[in-house]
Image (cartoon, rainbow, N blue to C red; front, side, top):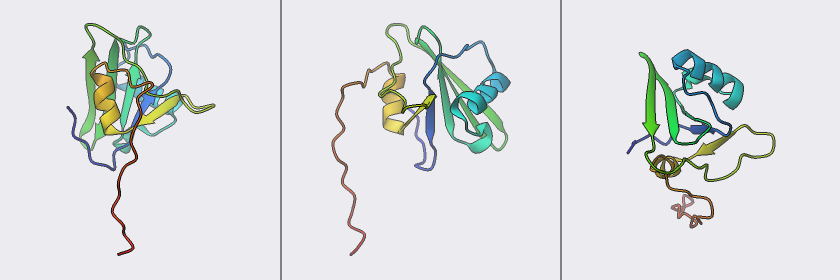
Length: 120
């Protein structure tokens, strides 16, 4: 499982991407599909047409990381459809971990979270 700081945003391309692309090709897809800067340090996830493989692109000061996951059974599913006109979905780290395990989150309900009262 990935442990990420809360400042890191996670973007998943909503359309399939040719995963034969490497660092530069996926950085270009980050700019064109997700419309974000690939050098930002955020995570960018791309899924193939059959939805059984995913690549995660992330940049750190010394260079890019590329993580690759293949599901032996099942498919990756976005937990929610993209907003109107959007070509990507933004997730939190919990949803990403479940999605990478092949768990379909569509139809799952998230309980309201408790936040401490800061007026104190």
